[in-house]
Length: 310
Length: 91
Image (cartoon, rainbow over all chains, first blue to last red; front, side):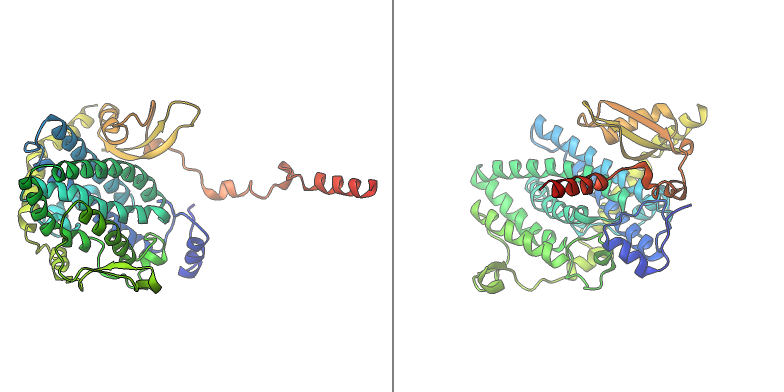
């Protein structure tokens, strides 16, 4: 009926030979569980990110930016829908279960959505720095991604995140070229968001990480994080901003003379706290999302009734 | 709720392509939601929504029986060998 593999070695050979797993396949239980967890985490993050964007629609300065934030919100919620469908098709939980666990504080999502965006500049730091970090890690998943249904929706998600990043950079440049107050606002936002953005990549990957072995991830966390730092440190400095890290320095001798920007030793405690829903804004974010879900129950009921009447 | 498979066709010569899946209560709702989920920026000119229950998924074993039928194809190697022999005989 479906494709199956005799054991994990057989499955690994299939993966190493460029094989792509489909939803109907009789995939190894561990693969199914790990990939499901990863996609559910991604879906939750898109949803929580979309709700953050939504908060800024009324406060975005000017009609064009309001339109942009409306579209971004719609994109992020749309990504969550696509991903929840892919996750639900893996057979562990349906979409309602995943949503209820998320709003109940029993599910994980990206660390960056456990912090509060205080000013408009925070929202720009998110659009520029955080979206770029998420974009880099999604592209690294898309590069190989042995789970076919996930790879196909990632293609769409990545193309839309590309628009978001350009919006983010455009908004940042407007602040950069603005008044001293605007520049100070962005510096303050950068001070708040630099480390959460760096944390988003996670601590160094376990060399035995099954997601690397099964080619869901194409690169270990530390490689992606390193590349991100190399790109964004000089860029932000060129705009005249200061990275909030006193030990940040350029080491000419790094990697046999290739040179690299090196940061302080990273404190992972803040990241771990967000994974326990113990981030600075976790409780408010989750309860807001839960309240939104409760407020829109009538829409879901109406949709169900439409189907029943047909 | 029904699960629909979404197929989009871009303008031009491309075929319909599977874009993903979604849930909706009926075909009318599916139409609205599919546009919002899969075609927000003119990604397609035609859209097919197919109730997953109506798809006949063929067992890969059925298709596997057609892989090993070499007489239905021709990779050109016999022709190449013959031409090479003729060239060598002529020279």
